Every structure is written in C-alpha cells, then in structure tokens.
Length: 364
Image (cartoon, rainbow, N blue to C red; front, side, top):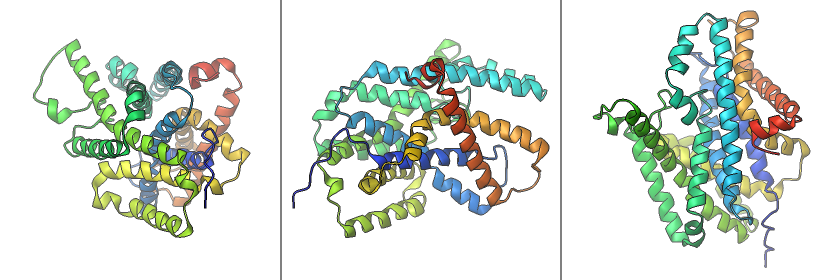
C-alpha cells in the first residue's frame, strides 16, 4: 500500500494540542509558590507536568527545522530578544512594586540591583525568563549549524543525540548544569577560580551559555531526525499494534525514567517522547478553533502567567486562603485552571494592541 506523503507545510495539530497541555503544566509547576508542603498527589502531578519546558524546546526546534522556508535567523532572534528585554524590565518594575508594598525594599535591592548582569543576560529578572535566552541559544545553534544538520546522515544525527544527551547528563550529575537560583553554571568545575570584576561576569556568561548549548543539543539532533521521518510519511503509516506499543512505551518513560535513567536523561526523554506523541496523534485530530487559539497564545501566557500567579496569591492569601494550611488537591487544580484562563484572557486582550504584539510577543 502506498501512503501519501504529508504536505510539509500542513499544520501538525498534535503539536498544538500538546502545547495547550504543556502551558497548563507550566502553570501547575508555579501554582502556590513558596509553599513548603503540598499533598502527595499534587507532587505527582507536578512531576508529570515537568515535561512542559523540554517539550516547548523540542517542539520549537522541530518546527524551525521542519519548515521548508529558509531559516530566518534575524526574525527568530527578534521574536525572542525583544520580548525578553521587555518582560525583564517589566518584571523588575513589578517585583519592585511588590517588595515596596510589603516593606521588603532591601530584599529587592539585594536580589535585583546587585545583579544587573544576571537580569539582562541570564533571565534573572524573574525565574521563568531563563527559558528565553535558552531558546535563543538553541536558535543560534540551528542557524550556525543549519548546513551541517541538513547534510548529516541519520547515523551521525543519532550519535549526536546520544552523545549530547550523555554530556548533558554528565554536567547535571556533577552539579555543572545551569543553577536557576544563582544564575550560574559549571560551579563545580570553576569553584577553584576566584576571579574578580568584569572577568568574573564574562566567565559566568560564557559558562551559562555553554551549559544552555549543551542542554539544547539533544533536542536539536532529535528534532532534525524527527523532521526527516515526518517528511517521509513514517507517522502516517503506523498500524494499530505499533500505535498501542508506542503508548505503552510513552507511559513507561513517564513512570520509570527518573528512577531508571536519572533526572537529566529523563528530562530529555520526556521532551522527545512527548513530541513524537504529538506528531503521532496529529492525523487523528481535527481542526479546533479553541485549541488553536490557546496554542497560539502560549507564548504570551508563559510571560504573563507568573505575574497573574503572584497577584492571585498575593490577594488570595490576604482575603481567602490560609497560607498555614496544606491546600486541597481540588483547590490547587482549580487555582491552576483559573490562573491559566486569566493569563489567556490577558494575552488575547493585550494582543489587540499592535505595539504590545511587537515588543512583548515579537510578532507583527
């Protein structure tokens, strides 16, 4: 039986569906910030939701490589860089307001004014903004290695995927990967150095972006392979048995990967296997306006949701919630969905303003 080749530019609805799930996962990970105790089931839900950032990385790189259009480096950099600068400044002002209102002005000075380098180059203005320079690093790698990726054999790409995955795992287990709290990387390796002044900051910048490059490489290699397989129609000729076996493998990865292969490799495995799942179910998904709208809004939701989350609990803990009590599962789920919907609504309303779309979302 001859299977028709998929149109290269046809929309892959499974990617949109999993984007919607992933952005909910991001909100779940950040719901009830600062709480030391959560119900055990909620901890498990948070573990499952940890696929979100790896999936966004793998999906972004896959779509960048998959398109038939030439890779527009400056357009993609603009889409990342402008929003990064805008939201970094906005979150600095937002946190200033929160700290001043609560009488913690000195804490703001300690966390923000003392580290302008981290704020402008390493995503330290708000802890979720580190994803933007990480994404920027991946786009630079794709742009500079575009010819190599297109000409490399499948064997070379597979070896690159395995090698870079092991390298990322190594820097994780040796405490050399990016540390979100301090915005540093390769701390173990560089602990013997005691450089001062600007040299310290340049060393910090280089080490962090090197760790991000290592983190991006497995997804880039895998996305390149996946793009080739998709173009050849492999995902349109999967029989029922293989489809079933894939989902058995999918849930096994989610259930056992942290235990069997460790956190670093499990992170890569979840991001890659979720992207495969998204592509695999695409032929079975029909066009849905609501799904596509949420999917296209995920970029803005990602930026806005932490502001909404902070205000939600800032007000809620004073009027409705008891911060000293462990919240119920239903309360946490309802809060997550409510925060997602508020962030979505804010994104839709603000997107009607052209200037906001340009500087905050990097689009026209």
